[in-house]
Image (cartoon, rainbow, N blue to C red; front, side, top):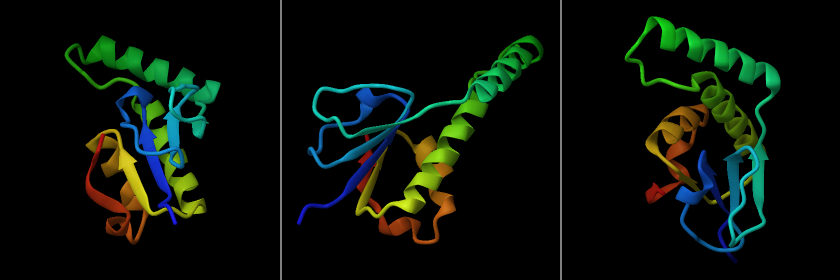
Length: 120
């Protein structure tokens, strides 16, 4: 019996090939050659609008701020956390530590699903 693996990525090109059974959650519609099992999280227009206002504010008043798209990132991680609670899986692979640290606190048994070296 194969393990059900879920990958979470903002940029799908940073997720390594695992097998054909994996499910990849991405930001928007992205495609990769080895799987068709991609679940996009589309950002609504009102979130994009709020995000652009917030980014404009940061650029104008905090000249050296490297924080961009914070509202979109928060929306994406919240949607992923909700979707992960509704599905059963054996392992999760995250693109980076930011995604892992933002999504996993929503789960009581967060250490159960993280394999060694699950950063893409």
